[in-house]
Length: 68
Image (cartoon, rainbow, N blue to C red; front, side, top):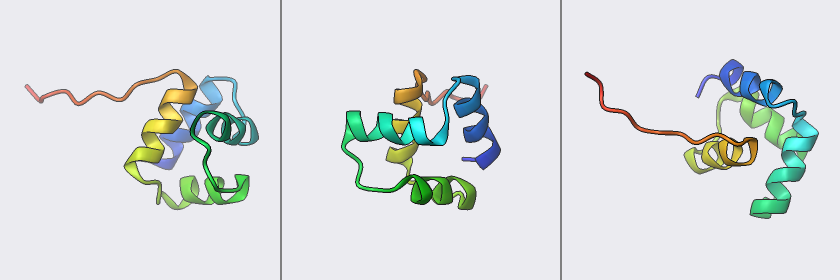
């Protein structure tokens, strides 16, 4: 997923990277640092399940929609 898209959703949710990290730790008990999370976003190396978790704690869901 494009890094600016993820950063946009974080900002649109009035969230910071630190707050996002805290939310992920609370809900999913992630074992990473704020710096590592930011690096994964910037390098676009997030795993699909990490993207789903980020979407969830920000109040979004990701849907697969068939192309018409």
